[in-house]
Length: 624
Image (tube, rainbow, N blue to C red; front, side):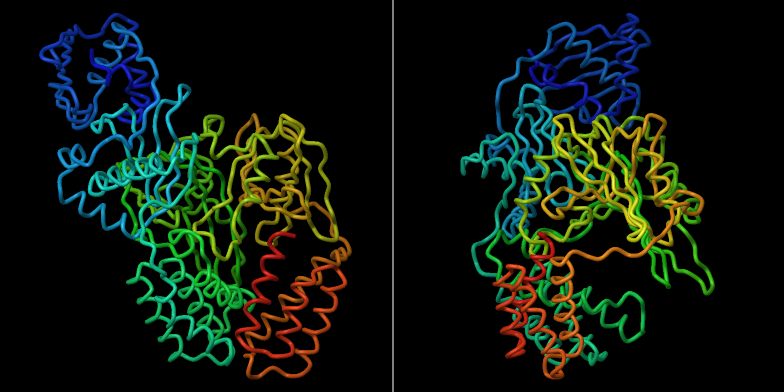
């Protein structure tokens, strides 16, 4: 009995081939045009009426099976033989198992020593994983790694390991996935879904950041306003050293810091003193944090990973604007992971393109409007560890088809059906300054059971909608008017009454769960507000008075940002007085620790007092 063939589900066959081939093979079997089966020494054979012959040897997988039809990959004949064998012998009974039981000897026999050596280099550096153990409902074991997803379609069979990585790196990731399950087994991590760091060494990597921390303190003392090209070159060298040391998240922060300083010298709209201050604090926070190396420092592989054949489900699009350019982000679901296709378009003098104006521009072989509301199947996609994806534009390697109802079949890890559980998941996250630097980290698809009310606040030019899940828990969909997307709020207000799902970024505000919407799925199709046409019909009014807590925390952050911009050596007495006054206001609101830290900074403005105060305020602003 070939247990491996009996264990292949319809979804597993679709992963190895595609759904079209599975449907075609099923129809042919139903019509009586299936193969005549035979077994020769464990090899299952199939002969079709047109003379095509298939041989499925044990332990080889479908891609290594033989078929006389001449197809380059897995063909409908091989799929039909599997389906016919299953109809003849029945389905395999589920039994719990773990890929960790696969030994290194078996890995070496199939993958070779060279692949295992390359995989061990990555393993020694450490990398984060999310493991999903097989269950009776879903018998496939899955490992989500930084650059790809590995699925074990058949218990204990390496020939049926599927990954979306290209052939050049596929075997390496398969070995890493086996070791991840093995380490989870050894550590007693037996939940259906577990997250942890696999591999890595226990040495303290903060020492590798000494040089860049010194530069950050120099910048803080002298001020971002005084930075010159010589200092920026020193930052570039420090970034290269961080990359060499595999400290990729600090390296990205340094890259952004150098870019922000260049933007200031160029008087660009991309410069933001608050962002510079946040980067300085982030570098110190990552050096001091005690969390897993891969999450805090990004020690996993940062190079891009070519994907062999990937199916991406669009989740909508967001448009950002400055006076100099327009940036679009198209969000895609790749299994349980959200990837982002990012693109910048420069803006010419006198031009003011809106999101709708950009909707017709070409990106990855399709218009932006089509790409943001489609299913993309590509054999020329590349994914980075930061979850950015590039998709080839050639029609021969990339197809774009209508989205349909694909959102309804997204994996549970991506779809929020329980708003209370989603809020608990958000609360359990570490602060943003030490989380992995990945795009769309908190983007989810929320299943909407009902819309309680929709309200527009003219002063804030903000639309709020209260939505519920099936259990009655609530969340607020909140979107603010932006001039470069003038019709976004109107499109959102029109789509929400019939919404079944909403994609967006989740956050907390005043104890409640807030969704920053990206797209809305209705019975008539997907609505992408940022690309909507027309001008807003919503009226404006007097801006609202911010609540005391938000206003005071924002004022304290502004004081710290201005101090970093001017330089702690050059602080005038009025700014230090502002810091003391803001600290008093924080104390009156009950934020005593933040107030004490800000007062200590005002009395003695040094990096040793500025960093604790600013870090505390950043975390307070994030969690308020």
